[in-house]
Length: 615
Image 1 (cartoon, rainbow, N blue to C red):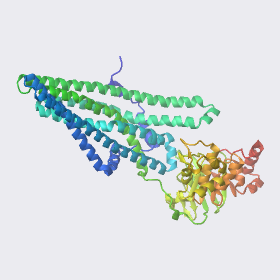
Image 2 (image 1 turned 60 degrees about the vertical axis):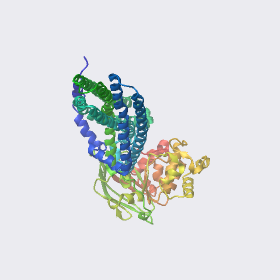
Image 3 (image 1 turned 90 degrees about the horizontal axis):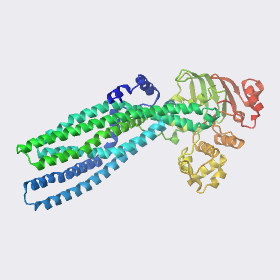
Image 4 (image 1 turned 120 degrees about the horizontal axis):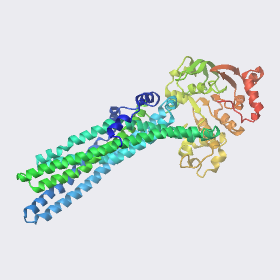
């Protein structure tokens, strides 16, 4: 015998669920409360107040007009049952037809206005969510995980769009139909209306039963789906690493576990919905039976006519669909509500403000120098990242960071670029100013970053380049592309700078994408460049990288020692400290750690530039 819904609801949440929720709250991005999400929605709707009032008014009028044919049907039944002259039937049918046409036209107009209002609301939410993602400190995004971030601006937005467009116009129309239907029964006879109200407590009981068991399930469903998305993306993005290290079974098992959690939660939700349907049917039977019995008693007493009771039954039966629509919409409302709280939680981090734009007046006119003193950094898990790093980068010079994996190279670069928050002792001065004293806009304007993850955005090539400097001219864009060795590719494009690239556009080889990223660095007005990318696959790309940072103060995370050899100075990091520092030739002459790394690299046949230090 299958377990009942109550048994399922008590057993569906594992003992560790509260602990899971607590850990999720600590590691993922925030989730807004229902009150905060509602305030966000109404705050947006305030800008479209008149539009909403007109849509609601049209909905009420359309619903009232749709009730007229049913009320006129009462007169038809009474005329026929009394055997009266039927000459008035044609007039009644004519009125019914006119009312039906008016109701249909007004309902169409109301639906159109509601859809437009909803589209504006969703567009604003989506724009604010994306703006928030672009403004969140990168370190926080990394800690939360790409799956959670992309799940909110992707899957959650899709759930919200689908749910709102499918449900809100229908729910609003259904609610108005229920109100006008109840009023219509009351105009026939107040006792019939009271009889119909007997079903109300059963409906309320059904809804309370459902809400008490479904709310936490929908929140968990959204979280598990985000985790599944994160595992899928990690496996797809790292497919070469997965294959080379024979991790296929491990990744498959991890993805399967995440998929099973999402599936099991969906099954529990379906069982709860089935229980709601059973209780809804009980409420419908209770209401119909009550009106039928009370109506029969009133007819026997001569207090109402047959047409009155028939019309009341028709109106009540007509309310099955809208009431059911409202109850069943709570399934989608819960799903959309969970998505909305996640989206608003994302917006709440930065308030949905647009990403910062750099004011050219904030940028220094001259080259800037960098001085780092006693820099410490510990990661959230307690691991030491840096243990007292000292570094000087003169204006216009390039310093390369070298070291084994975990030495602290990317940590220094991350703190300087703002990718990692500085949560330790020490100081960083750029152009004589402490890094912590710089506003976010000043830091963005001062420091440009080229990371290992290069990307072409969907749009034209010009739009991709102008991301670094919206004021750049076409000639400056072409010059930057030529400087990094992308001129032959540019000449081959059918529409030049107007060629569509990225998703849905012209596909580009990874080497070309790297060159476009370097062209962005060249166009950027930033005086400092942090280069943490692997552009030195061959001599041409290394030359392009050097050209992109020429004349600016640069910190290069050397993934290949050929990058270090081309720098003005080299810092060798070990265990979060500076082990050696100086020009390439001096470090080789010292026969220290750098010389060991260099000889190991060049002796392995990597002297052509294809070798790399561990990063």
